[in-house]
Length: 509
Image (cartoon, rainbow, N blue to C red; front, side, top):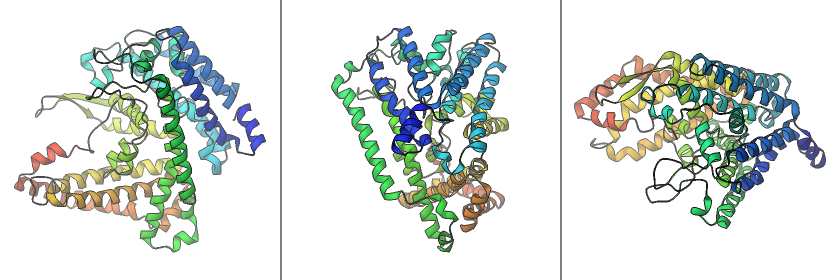
């Protein structure tokens, strides 16, 4: 479903049109972001019209008019429902569900009529994936604006939309050019502050967050992001040249099957990193566009320096050096994770007061986990591999938490074994990365036959290991015995205070 521009360039250079679509859409956003910097600050009409016109041009050029008209119809529909039934809880639920169903149409179109071997380059679903997040988060935030702030967690109260925006303002949000294809899908209040030139927060220390000249001379502010883009492209080129031959599809070969298990795990680890490079490329280039426009400004740090991290989609070092699955997952596709947390998970929790701390906390229900899983699955698509990956992640999460509760306090002060914490961290690092890259095989291969062949070649090792580990820790009571030992050694305070690091935290922006 490529537009005329990708087809013309494809014919001219002999490059697949689907692969060009993503590149063109991101590159086109660079000059758009540069021009946006010099538009009148605080002129809402100019800013919103500029976003709508430029996004229409990008989507029509890359995907065609029929695609854009579907995009526009979804925008108008979601706005109408949210406006007409504002204050009704079922309204954001309806918008959320219909947005996912609309996105599912494109997922199924890709799955049924697309070329599976080129599925990763067929990015027709990308804009609708971002639009789904924007429409869903807007509908819920508008509903939250009718509720008492005291009844909302802080992460939701800051996102609440108090006054009903106009249709043009809403279109300026859904058509906002930054993150149009690869994200991030900013909250409505963030984009509104951008187009109106409001301050980033109530703090008097914060200068106007969208007047770059107050921070850095214009020459540096434009040149630096462009140099970052060149560095990102160079890094990707080097990584692709060095690791391009590593592929999960090699797991289907007789050669891979003949290797020993350790070699297979090592190969899958490297192939996983090589595959993630293309995600790093898209997200980093998109982040640079946000930096050029100014919307990535996120306040002032303790040293008085401006922070430009609002558009961060991944935390590279935190992910690649993670020592537990939670840190790994929290560092990947950050804004999508925040959407699932704030606008799906927290919608099915109950606020209670913690007896020990006296603070209000969110207690999840079983339906909260189910709704989050279903929304994430629908958002990604309907290939079996996605569901195998997400379902496999459930025992991994349980096992990691159990191991952490049972053993981590023994390697923290004042435990006599605290000196062995580096060895403990090294062991958990290896286990985390080998296991997650192993599970990612299903996410990439997608089809049942391929997934079965690949996991058979590795003897379903991590699946068996995770289930067996849970049976030992939970079923045989090893975790409970370790906690009892911690109590005798006086380590329970360490466990309560330090165990949440990387385990139970829910990061927000």
